Length: 439
View 1 (cartoon, one colour):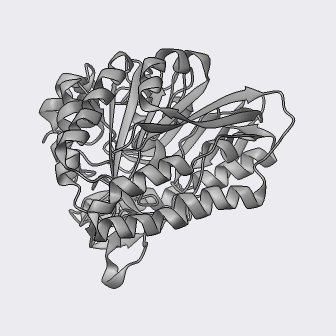
View 2: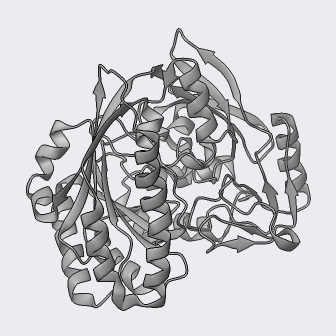
């Protein structure tokens, strides 16, 4: 999938190419029992354990020099419960396979992120989300979890069973155990009408509350060095289906978003001075379009141009001010930014370390083309985000630590106490968890 799974000499690399590790050994269990055995064996051998998905995190959240568990044999749908409208899937199932299989069954998730290369456990464990006025992250749609804990036992949890584990483990960061299966709420397949249109940056900010309130799923992309954005509004529709014509879809999604964009980034990396001009052309090349299709064909799209990313959740009430500061910073910095800034929202949820935990949130994501120096841009952006008590996405680049998180997450202590109970010897530790959760 996204990651170069078996790189040279046993090295594992993530999709963004900025993390690589050499585990002591790799295990590809074919069942939950085999996975539990691998966990017990690692503990006996004094090795740490990490499960890895498709490598779409930009942080080293899945990195280990101990036992690396690959979930590609733990895939597929275990059961569909039409009475309770849930589906239970194995943890290694790619979102793409889940979405396609559900659609065949006339079912769908309520909301999803903008790519579907990740495994269900990797996506939910890091808090992957799309945009939504009323519907939250993929993890917010979880109704039950099964995980192998540090002693090799299998624990199941839901709102009724082990509720204190359920509160935290939906976005468990790999710190509480290895997730083996997830039960999601689903609903009958529905149609979304997507309306994409360019809009001036100042107008989007002036009308942000209205755009948010009037649409089930609102997001926009701002092109640095320009006053232009592309807005996306996805709303449920009675139909009829009017998918994007294949040729037009290919030209706009594959050729412009991936092909031409790749070339533009190569030029920009070689000659940074060309970036503002390219940005102006890119932002003008966008035309309005409307189409109606099933959810995963509207929410998700391929991302073939490799990049690194930082994303922060700020309180929704602070998003306009934060974006004004970000634009002012880019304008005066002399930075050359070739990737658009993506802005999305999520309602407050009840997951302990969800970026939307207890507060209505807006997400601001900054990207840089892979191989270009990103530190100055990300550092300056992070300074703005943290001034608004921003919470970074767990799978994207940030420099925050446990001391910071204990301030911006009121329930932080709940999570670390549960970790002490489930993994007292830190079998699932790595450098990243040590930094974000403390020793």
